[in-house]
Structures are given as structure tokens and as C-alpha cells.
Length: 292
Image 1 (tube, helix red, strand yellow):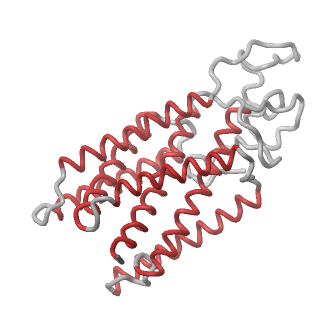
Image 2: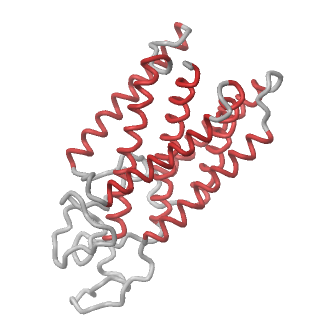
């Protein structure tokens, strides 16, 4: 099973047996089911290295000290999200969004968003994580979020940004709780449904953007009014589903002993998803504030 996030799309931590518990170890001698990190199987590229659980003769070997842990993922995610928040706050302070400077600030924000997108694509197609690249993405993404958030706070509702932040945190906590309580089971069917819904959602958003650019106005109306509210809710639900897929990837990476460096990819994927949820939450609350 592969994640919705492009940073995970070329990895294959996962098992095909549905849901697994945090820190659960794979069964000894179990088939790899396509997982390159499955311990004690021929499919595991680390099974013959000095730190593998068994050596080439099947004798016990020293435990690998460089495997990914939940603490590694939490630490790297904190660093990545911290960079996003820091540059967002700085851009909010440094880049004014008054009428005289709004065009300039918007230009910088759009430029930062494009750079962040390029950096994320470069990292997505690299075989190994590059921490500097991931943190650079986070920095430029933060600039974009800071300007957008400042604009919404200035011209729509000063309290919307904090509401969007709290809403994003609640979605994250809710999905994590539901995942650990086994209320959400990430299976191939779940993955296929989420990906199909995500593709359809993105195609509609692109069509709406093209109509708004060439025909003017609100395009097809998917980003404002009643339809905007509906698609905002759908976007947040999709973000929550992406979180479940990300949790599954992290869980399987830990269970199968993925290299510690993979924790950077986990942090990157979680950051991408949380940014998605925040932007959808911010847009939804902005529409609701405008309708008051």
C-alpha cells in the first residue's frame, strides 16, 4: 500500500494485512508482501547488513541501531512544522498586506509557494530524504501561509486564522485517536477510495481555476458560496483520510525497521497533509465568516 503523499509514493513500508498496532513487530518468517523493510525475509535489503536481525547463516546478529522510531518522527515533524510556523510569523510581520503593499506581498507569497512546490517535487523523486531540502520547503511554505493568513485576518475576520489552526489541530488529534482505537482501518479498498476521491477533487478544483482565469468571476463556484462550503468540508475530510494513510506509513516504517533517515520523509508527508487541512479549514471558515 502506498501513501497519498508524493513523498511516500515510491516507498513501500506497508503490509497488506490491514491495520497494525504501533510498535508492533512483524511475525518471524512471515512473507514480505512486497515490503522492502520486512525483517528476516529475502525482500529486506537490510537483512544481510551488519545490523540486520540475522546474518547470512541465520545466526542472531546485533540489533540495528539506526532504525526509525516514533520519537524520530515526532522530532523531525516538530522541526519541520516549527520551520513553517516560524517563517509564517515572520512573513506576517515583515510583509504588510495593506492596500499599498498588498500586490508586492502577494507576489512574494505566490513566488514562495511555487518554490515550495518545486522543492517538494524534487524531494518526492529523490531516493533518499534530504533534510535541508525538506526544511527549505517548510520555510517557503511558511512564507506563503503567513501572507495568506495575514490577508484573511485583515480583510475578512481577525479570528479566522486562530480558528483554522485550532481546527487543524482538532482534526489531527481526532484522526490519531480514531486510528489508535482501530476505528479507522487503512486497507487497499480505503486507499483506493481516498485516491479516487482526491483525483476527482483536484480535477474539479483545476477546472474551477481555469474557468475563473479565462471566464472571470468565481469560475464554477466551487470555492465560494454554498458549493464552496460543501467542497471545503470535502477537502477537510480528504485531508483527514490522508492523515490516516500517513499514520499507516509511519506505523509500518517503525514496525519493519526502516532506516532512521526515513523519519524525515514521514515528517515531510505529515507536514504536507497538515498544510492541506489548514488551507481548506481557512478557506471554509473565511466563506462562513463572509456569509454572516
